[in-house]
Image (tube, rainbow, N blue to C red):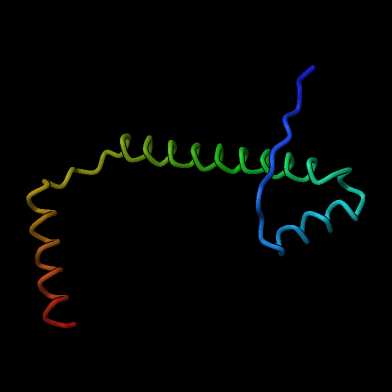
Length: 88
């Protein structure tokens, strides 16, 4: 059986109120349960973001579009930068 470690954290009053409200609904037994659920949700969100980024990288690597030479990209960026300095 895992041993729980007690920690102390500082949160803004609004977050404390949100935690207490969730406990008051009866959906959670304690502030600890709310925090554990929040961390699990954060883990899921980060995993989904990682999967999304991985998918976008794979898509970019699998793209058969012709590559643009770096020199051409930098030349275009310099043109855009020069134009923005003139216009702004």
